[in-house]
Length: 99
Image 1 (cartoon, one colour):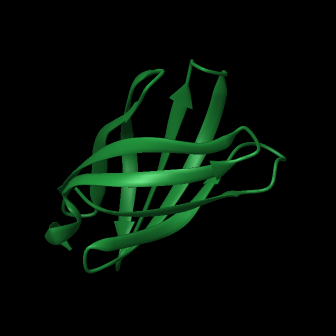
Image 2: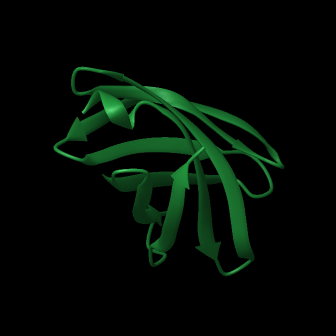
């Protein structure tokens, strides 16, 4: 689904409060790469996958905390929902819209 490519404004509901992100997705067939932007920094990623209307990728944060996250985002038109998961912690809800 090439219409998934582009910039998405998302909110991740964390124990530290809602975190606003801008996620730029580049889709090449079923491969996904891009960058996640947060007030604390810019975090590139590669090696993501696209299956139907769902993108999954791993990203490493270095600020405000260090964490390896697996992000799963499911797209429906101009909206997105999903989950950010880190290790044994429960997943954090993601909601957003096309920028």
